[in-house]
Length: 160
Image 1 (cartoon, helix red, strand yellow):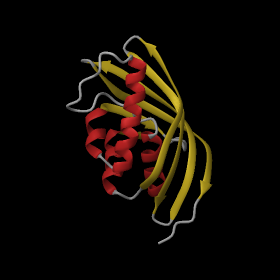
Image 2 (image 1 turned 180 degrees about the horizontal axis):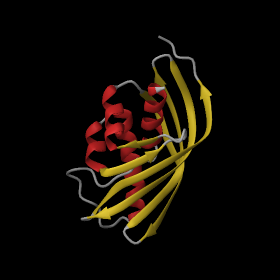
Image 3 (image 1 turned 120 degrees about the horizontal axis):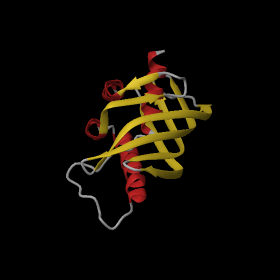
């Protein structure tokens, strides 16, 4: 059960996981806030594939909360713990149908994700819909909440 929860957190939290600017990077004043959030989403997926925990530590809000497709609730410490464990390998991860809506200093990003993953003897290709909620503070976007709904799962055999 813990493995399933870990997989759900990493796959589903990260599909939406979008945060603020990367440390050391300055925001390009010529891009729109919508483009900035989409760029952040893509940077976060890259960090997930590379298992770059530092990106997640930097940009998840301290009060981050995530609800996975199994109705389990997770917090920042949970997500960081699962990433550090290395129990899950994301082989591919794609985002599509991204839409961004703004409500003052709050932004909601919705979209689809498709990922191929493996963990121990388990593996699958998952397709999900996600919603991420961002808050802008001190000029940066922070991911404060996320939720994922499974569209489909195709089990994969895992070769050792």
